[in-house]
Length: 137
Image (cartoon, rainbow, N blue to C red; front, side, top):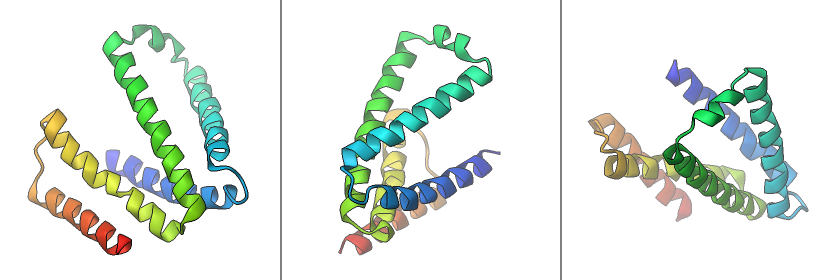
């Protein structure tokens, strides 16, 4: 099932790039990011409330909160830079370079989470890096 979620994530990320490029035209990229974030805030909290999951917030440990806050900071910075890149560059170049994050996440998962990568995952990551280098040059 996780593969379907991942494919849906990829589809909506691609759609996000196109819609964001159209949305940042003649708009400060920071303002555009703030509007996007506000929409996401309403949607996600609406889902939590509709699913009756609000009580789970009280069950979060300090460690959960710390890493979720740090993740939020990383996400916010990623979005700010992504929107700035979209504002000044072509989606066909910005989006693939942004996906270098996949290869970086793979490397960081080995270092910090001690995950083991199989050969096809390593090859896939190296192809992402190679593709990014080709696009940049």
